[in-house]
Image (tube, rainbow, N blue to C red; front, side, top):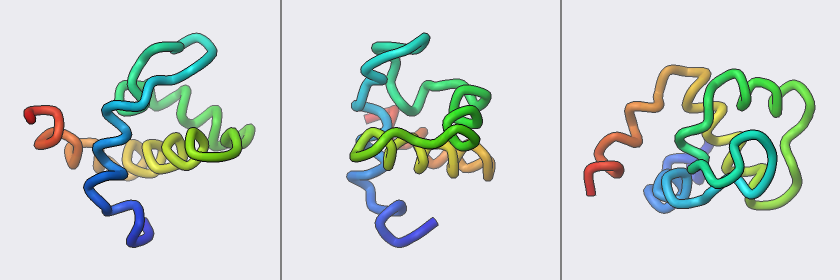
Length: 75
């Protein structure tokens, strides 16, 4: 992950940003299933901020680092 990805604000955004469309519309990016994130990784992430957050969550999920979000969830 790059330095920007480790920024606490970026991680917090995964918990507060909702998926705006599709099967998981309304679900927080942090709560999307791995197979859905993998699909975006194969097919291409959407442009802009949403794509950046989906790519970050995919990276965390793929590398078994989703637990980094747990302290933020407890706040």
